[in-house]
Image (cartoon, rainbow, N blue to C red; front, side):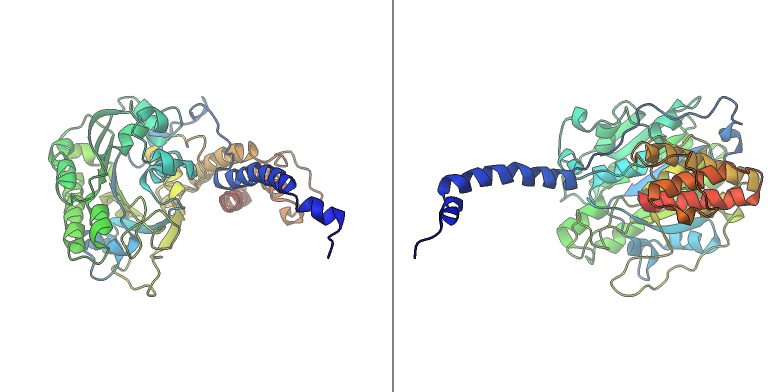
Length: 430
């Protein structure tokens, strides 16, 4: 059987080679666009308007202790059999407010720290940077974040002990630091003892307004032995004792009366003790805010609690980037420019209704600015014939409509409702 000329032409080795060479770069471009999408980046650092009433004067706290326990999955803190007995007691009595955070993949340390400090959503490029030894490749000193904002405050001074990933990301931020490499996964003890030994001395000093601690031992146990290892509960008890020590200092030390502790995981771990993917066990770390002052806004929660087997959603689930605007509000800082998070609403009870509206609006303005830089059809001057923003054709038009409505009558309670709608829509869009 003789094939037609057109078929023979298509089957020609030269034609197939040319087609393969054309398809290869096209497929690489499609892959790169999906895996490494373009992200809008706003340069500079956020600041309050000149006529803005000092947020620091109204902020309920002036110091933060940020304690990261690597791979602290939600059930390690909130479930029956957890070693965090003192933390659970604080949750029951209202001195701590618990959450589960959603840590988007890649669930490895460097991108998760970026999310918790800048409020942005890191990409898979950070998987490569996570293993880079050079500080220049991962340095984000030039990106707006709450660490830089806290240091910029009068008398601002930050200290750090633990995972040296923080020193790679923020090489000029810390006044005192003792970093530890995260790649000696066979070390379950010394890597944490090197952090804990600094705590008594740091809690006595009043020359800092931000302290970062990043513990690695629990993550190392997971990698080597798995989450159900006999070593896991003793390590949880060790971390719980650190929380106890810090809480006692907040109750007794005068300079820590307006300090609060954030206990959190950067990511979770799967049943093999590993992480990096998007399984629920990997994307569900714990998040606990701790302070005696929280009793004024919280009546406490049942703890420990049961959740369906195989799930890890305890209490309210928030985005990991929501930590950033929440810390900004609690400390009286401007929200970082590239933040995509929304203030966790449980903390609004610290302020009057007028101040709540102001705080929510600042968050909404910042989100609108960064979103406006990303979407061409987003305009604050959108003209809508219908009074309902649901009549708009696109998300961009809807955001513009909601934003315009928030500016119509700032004195009405509807302003608060529309700002809430705008925050919710921007959060979903991002």
